[in-house]
Amino acid sequence: MNNVELENKVKEILQIENYFDMVIAIKEFEKEYKGSDFYKETKMSLVEVIKQAKLHYALQLSDLSSKVQKVIDGLNVDNLNQVLDQISGVFGQENEDIRESLEVLKNLKN
Image (cartoon, rainbow, N blue to C red):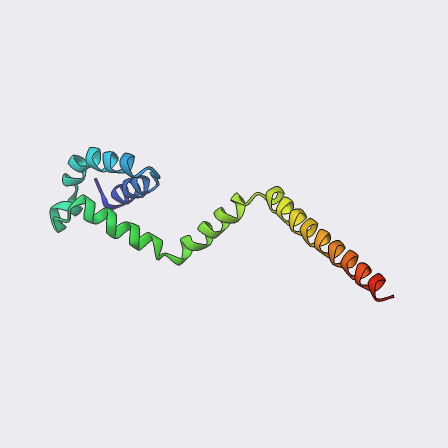
């Protein structure tokens, strides 16, 4: 297994969202990893490689823009519009209540 294949497999493992499933995937890959030239040269444990790779990829600025775009794509504009409508409704009601209170005060003054 060369470094490109190794990197692809590590990235694949890092994409697993469920922690326990990720641990199982690491255990399943460990034997193959230990046969790689990288392991033979560095003797780094697979768990350590995963930790360092996660940090390394998290700090990559080129990936940052795609992560931000993924978050933006995941935003539901309909929900945002509903929240804004609710906020404007609350403010509208408060404004109406204040106007009515001012009318009552005005009438009491006269």
